[in-house]
Picture 1 (cartoon, rainbow, N blue to C red):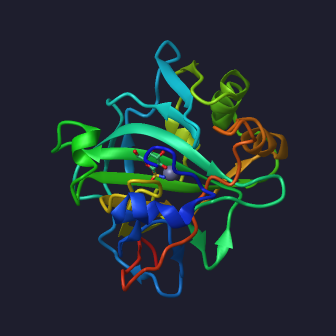
Picture 2 (cartoon, rainbow, N blue to C red):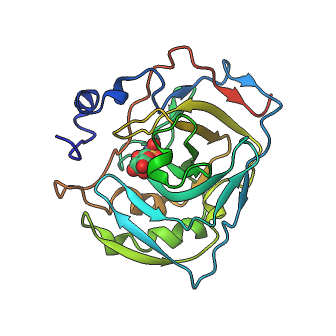
Length: 255
Ligand code: 1SD
Ligand code: ZN
């Protein structure tokens, strides 16, 4: 039933939430040979993303992912014609035996994916914005295993043991949220899609960065094997399969 959707039960999403069966769904596979270079796609600009340590942010296990609430002072400009405010960020991942990004590039799935969710400032709230076609903008970046620890991701990962059980939350000290995203904000793909979870509203302008983020093997293990699900199993493989493009165009900010 409603609010009890799961990744084991994908076939039921469009029964309970009709938009999940729509023609502008996310995630998608990005075929880079089909992406259209659009010189008018300007570099993404993030303002106010560097938060002081005395600013406390809520981090929660909501049963589907780990969510970090963001202050509305974070703004997204550039790249988009409109202005957006940040609401929260969260992650999608696989398991020790397989990758779990939502978007794929030329059929390749990455270890994990971060989503930073924003809403258009022309609306009064996130919940109002999420039902309008121009309501939301989500920034997505891929996470891979590389050499060395990523200190920004540690600011989140070091708290996961405190929120292993669904519904648990803790406080995280402010840090530079932009450090969770690639340093290069010029290279990205752009398309119109949806929330990747029910109610799957088709109100998201997606930006998928071309550069990936590197985490150590231990950091990735911590991400994929710490949180528990509503069934009290490990919360793993919290990604939706790629959806049909139905003729949608994917734009690239670079040739
Ligand atoms: O999966 C998230 C979901 O947890 C929620 O954050 C929603 C926004 O209300 O966004 C989706 S997603 O499309 O950013 N994956
Ligand atoms: Zn997401």
